[in-house]
Amino acid sequence: NPAKSWYFNLQKFPVRKTARSYRIFCLGGSTTYGHPYDDQTSYVGWLRARLHDADPDRDWQVVNCGGISYASYRNCHLMQELAEYQPDLFVIYDGHNEFLEERTYGELKQPGTVMLAKELFVTRTRIGTVLSRLAGQGAPAQRPTVLSPEVDSILKSGIGPEQYHRDPDWQKSVVEHFRVSLDRDAQIARNAGAQLVLIKPASNMRSFSPFKSEPGRLLPAQAAEWKQLIEDARTLRSQERFAEAAKQFTAAAKLDPQHALTQWEAGDALSLAGDLEAARPYFVRAIDEDVCPLRATTQIVSVIEEAARRNQLPLVDFEKLLDSELERTSGPRIPGDESFFDHVHPLIDNNRLIAWGLFDKLVKLRVVRDQPSDEQLVQRVAQKVHRGIDPQKRALALINLSQVLLSAGKDEEALKLIWKNSAVLRRLAPGIGRLSTSTRAP
Image (cartoon, rainbow, N blue to C red):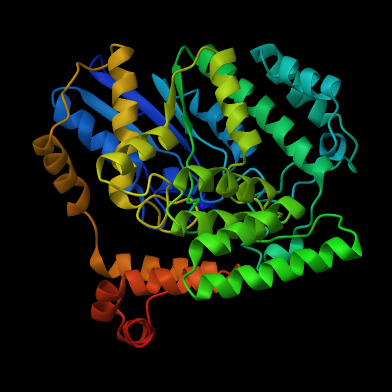
């Protein structure tokens, strides 16, 4: 379908498998896709290269089915179709896109437990799937559409974060729908006789502020106190008096725990003051209180962990892998710009961590023999992954990503992205390169 070409990598695999074939379908959103680049540098590309290195005689068919802006409910439909193509393993990296698209649910917009349980029960059998199709054929013409024909994310439509407002009931509905989707994924895999591995997502906590903040319900006197605390804290921060600024920011965060930016600024000041242990809860709370939640919230992550336990599925904990890597390299131990391009998309070499985690799960599933990971292995596989990077496409991808950030109101983050990659951009896009060198580092 040409209309979908923008959302997916071009992937091919034989219709029929041989005895030597092992077929893996990797689903998810833009992280699985490989954004801001493509399949070559995604965790899927890294996994494919690692498996070929470990056992070159095996026919490893590692297929990248990641879709830009795709969330779990869309991936359910895609997974159901892929189940007809003799899968051995499904891999799912979901969670960041659940709040991205404005969905029209009808009854599902505010789903009750009975409604969700009924939906899950009906789709748990192949007979149920047929019944669902028949029910759809007999539905009245005015029946609400659950999904638009293709993704129409709020940010992609150009409206931006201002479209979002705090809506606890809608967020609760989205979380419940996500829970149902993951259970449905597990059932689809079982029906297909395939294994399923889930990936617990990670995000840029330290270096990316919330997309949108809205204040909680404060009395006038409280609002005035909060405002003064924020003004004083920002003055102290500009003077690099970070410990003093942290006290003011944390006081403001306690006064208004729902204001996402205040939570993030408290974490940022504590981090700059060197108190990372105290900073982390504020960064987490900032993600949870973001009115435009484009990073997996605590609730979303908990649903993934629960789904893995409930369905007895292997779980790759990307956040834990990233923390370990930061500790190994003497990093700040709270993910930031040294780990991500933007709010959620890992740098190329950090996609390796996900692939290595998946490889370990495949060893435990006895799909592939263990292969100790040393520096020589990393360099050998990295050469294969990096070999396919087109420098000009890389520059264009970074420029496109900065434009997306600008459209979302993240001017500072867009500038940081341009400045960090100034060498590449200066060589391939001189105008952007001049901008990056004429502007001080953010």
